[in-house]
Image 1 (cartoon, rainbow, N blue to C red):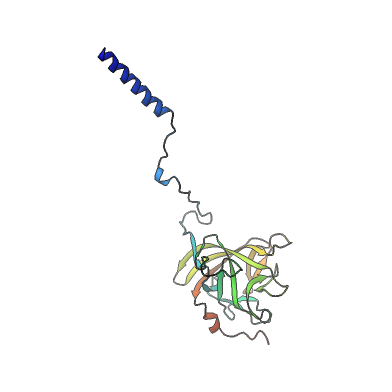
Image 2 (image 1 turned 45 degrees about the vertical axis):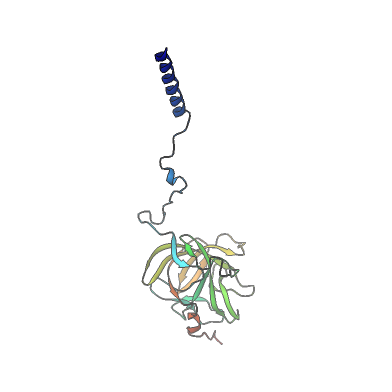
Length: 225
């Protein structure tokens, strides 16, 4: 009797274990990493691992150079059209045109593929002070003023860093207010001037960090006056 009871217990235990194994899904392969998101490859350079940042930070100031090492600045005219190699300017990077306070990630890094605005502390004779970089759609870019502006919301893609600065493929995410004309998200350099155009082309530039007081030390523009 004892042997028969013992045999029945063994059969019941084995049945319970088998039922438990077959009634539950398999555990994740690596439960410690179940909340991690897959890394999306950089389509611009699949053979190379990019950082998640452009190397530049919101709230910091930079000069911007072209591939030949010429700095972006004003052409010295009344509207201060932006041109490489003439009267270099210092630009400040912001994640909003609302001028956030110091406790709102003012100096957080700009992510690879991230968006930002450029503040020109000097502006032009038309702005009477600093202004946001703007465009007139399909033409020059300059410090926005009055009714002559479409503020530019830039985007950038990381191209590597060196002692010279942070290389960025610079493009336009959108113009604000939204353009009634299609597209106009392209950039090009022609005659050293930086232009907006009706496509989505980008330009290669280098951001070099400087003091935000540096613009006060720049050569003063006479704005043609």
